[in-house]
Image (cartoon, rainbow, N blue to C red; front, side, top):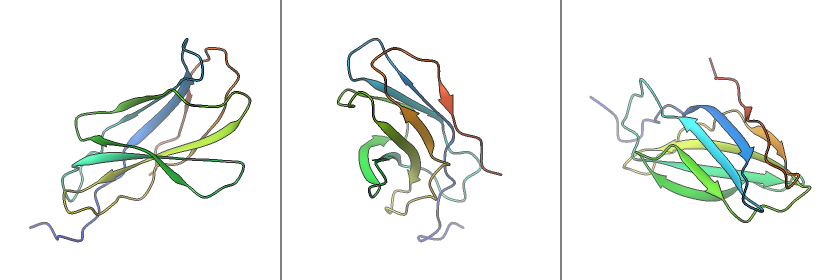
Length: 115
């Protein structure tokens, strides 16, 4: 039986790239697998210039991608994703992905799965 305080497993394979839309960054990930509790949703967090991590978006469990349309150009961001259980318990974050915005569509930058 699952414990109410048990953490879900984090998602994996976070990828980040710029889209053809101005100031738009696309973030995707693979859903949590083999989790001790079911995942009710995901939280995308970001930081820049060594500031504190902030919540960028909270998404439902059936969503595994998000396009942020307010990114500044020529800024180095770091993104990570967490799973969240129905009781509000957050997973550990994924490994952060560093991404420098240029205003030009780019190739994907990905995290390495946690072991």
